[in-house]
Amino acid sequence: MSSPVSCLYEFGPYRLDLEERTFSRAGQVLALPPKTLDLLALLVRKPGHAFSKQELMSALWPDTFVEEANLSFQISTLRKALGNGAARWIETVPKHGYRFSQDVRGTIPDRSMVGAPHHRSGEHSTASLRADAGFAWPVLPTEAINPVSVALDNASVSTILEMMANEDRRVVAAVHQERERIAQGVEIITQALRTGGRLILVGAGTSGRLGALEAAEMPPTFGTSPHVVQAIVPGGQEEVFRYRGQSESEDRYEDGVRNIARLRVSKTDVVVGISASGTTPFVRGALTRTRKTGAKMILVTCWAGSDLQTFVDVMIAPAVGPEIIAGSTRLKAGTATKMVLNMLTTASMVRLGKTYGNLMVDAQTRSDKLKDRARRTFIIVTGLDFDQADELLRRAHWNVKVAIVMQKLSLSYVDAVDRLKNSQGSIREATGEDIEHRLRELLGMSP
Image (cartoon, rainbow, N blue to C red; front, side):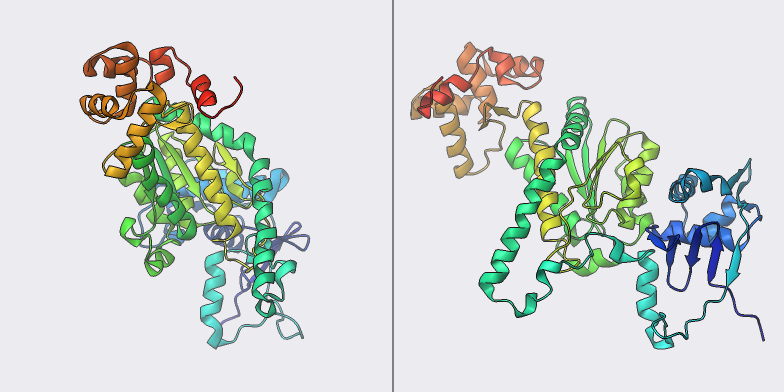
């Protein structure tokens, strides 16, 4: 009979429990992504052994081709989790790979004690789900139980609504706390778009749908090409509102890698990873591949403890707290994420001259409603009557910005387009006129 295999490993102040899929230090559970925990398990099982890079990559990503950068990222993540002192336990073997140099004690824990976790053979599927998570989910604020709503299923409708309204007030405050980091994100996005780069939004589940919605709103609102702001979700755009497709593929780290590679992301672009928990494998794969391109990276999450904070250029993490339904991140986390994405895109577009004052002057005009809005905006700015506005807008091919410059400077369509181009798309710069005074006057406000 073969000897039982150890599933509990101790080294220094750390403990790795492979049956429970937990990693802890002095009794405190530490969050490790799934692949990082798997990597640690490989290393501690054979302390002192010099693993080749290919050996580790084959074990971590069987039957899948991945780049060496993926392994480097996992090694870096593991070293950071161990801390400055213990990070040296993972030695780099020059021109070969890595070894774990610390003494390790492996034991078979006794699960027979009352209260100790125990898994029967019929519970395999639950254990697999925990293995996919890679750490104890309760450590995530997005998965925690909210003490305010423990009796939710027994509450009246008015109580539920009051509860939700009170919790949503936390969202605004949490997002406001992140305003400096949001501003940094805006500067990064503005610079990229101004120099011909793209904004790529990557997410899965609710986060992915919010990213897709944000990307879809840019062309009609700001007249951008669909190429400029794009969204990546597991399974492609056709899976945005199909839960099954996204739920199956959001755990595939390699799919995130492939999607970024397929888009040929370059250093001129910006990639925004969206993940309420900060742990989604699809998003992590996308960011890992992005780093190799040299593109700037922003992470929007609701977990300030995400290890990705040292991996991306800016991490925006509004602390909204646990949901009234534990783990339902479409609620406060979703609202906070939508607010942050609104801020990132709107402020960036304003900086790029997509508004004149607070007027929408770069919107598409493909419907009668949108043409009517364009006409009203043009009349507000120029003071012309309906027929005059209609005639000039037709000459400007229903481009409000061009029409305004044509009227203000008495230019032809071609010259107005050139003038705007040389002014980086800003009507204010092109005409030298400020719209604020006129808008205040129309609103009956003091100058």
